[in-house]
Image (cartoon, rainbow over all chains, first blue to last red; front, side, top):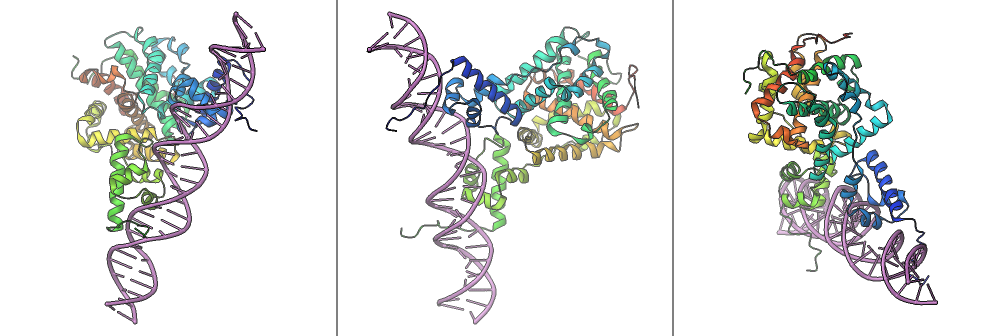
Amino acid sequence: MSAQSGGPARRRSAVATREAIAEAARALFTADGFEAVGIRAIAARAGVDAALVIRYFGSKERLFLDVMTVDLPVATVMEGPLENLGRALVEHVLDLSSSTSGALAVTSLSALFHASDREPVRRTLRETVERAFAVPLTGRLRGDDAELRAHLVAAQIGGLLTSLHVVRDPVLTEAPRPTLISWYGPAIQHLIDGRFDPDAQVRP
Amino acid sequence: MSAQSGGPARRRSAVATREAIAEAARALFTADGFEAVGIRAIAARAGVDAALVIRYFGSKERLFLDVMTVDLPVATVMEGPLENLGRALVEHVLDLSSSTSGALAVTSLSALFHASDREPVRRTLRETVERAFAVPLTGRLRGDDAELRAHLVAAQIGGLLTSLHVVRDPVLTEAPRPTLISWYGPAIQHLIDGRFDPDAQVRP
DNA sequence: ACAGTATGTCATCACTGTTGACATAGCGAT
DNA sequence: ATCGCTATGTCAACAGTGATGACATACTGT
């Protein structure tokens, strides 16, 4: 017991421990969010000392960013027929919670959202919007302002997602699925179709 | 120096101190958000010991909730003519940042969003939605599902607000104001008018 | 067998929200 | 005027946080 006891230090490869830490962090962050999870909890779950977490990832924030990349599984929907995309998107968003990958995407997105007072987190969110909506949609839209409209569709979907899963508005979470689709779908479709509103006054 | 020096303890009335703390907390929370602001910083700004902050408000979270009530100044817009409400709402949202009360509402709302992993904060957000959108709008809407549509309008506005001020999507923040209004306004108007989409298949 | 490096732990720091013991001011009653 | 009581406030401390640097051990190549 005279030795300062650096511990038994059974080694695994550096990449293996790194991945163990990442895995633990992913699980805890998506479950409880950025602030609620401590590096000691992550370290414990990875079977490692807390200092090592910092050594491998620099800081808790960088670990969060490294680990929390969201893949909204909307790619196949976005490739569907344009004339029904609004409804299809809403249907898909409503179904997210019932698929495992979708539910994970939703919780990850919520975690990112709650941590988005940090600029790097905002960057990740913007990249998600870009990847999931702007890239697949912009090229397909007919008419003016395709890119802007794609981003506005993302804003609408984002509004629906946050109302459902962040704010948890009971009027939305408990609304009948078909009703919700029939109302919100066409509102989105409006931006996809690119019809001008007859009441619109100025179109520069 | 023998006395343990509880300090000179210049008194003010309890309500005055309470208000001083609340004021300091409001300012710091709206500026920097819930997590970034410490009790000691609030106490210092109020000219008081940190322990007193807890004594008066119970906890940092309860202080946050007591102090951060958002008043989206949309009442007058919501009373305007229904046939142009979509555009008017978008215009108003885009103008928020340039009025002092609007900018404060936006920053407060952002702070609430970032802290909305706590249920009481979600409650506050839901009350804001109810007060700002559901109450003034539901009664005015013609057609089916008035309440649901009002909440969906809130979701759309929320999506726009978060895209602009939380995610800070540059495609939106740098888009020409009239273009943005002309696209997003009609999309909202769709829910206000309550027109059925010709492609809609099911209307229960 | 030895040196060097890769891997890991420990003690510690400044900071956080929160608590309980303590101190003083101000006021009403005598 | 002086006591006592309560309202108001401060202080020291605690367990927790993220982060840092010194240290220890295992492994690898020679």
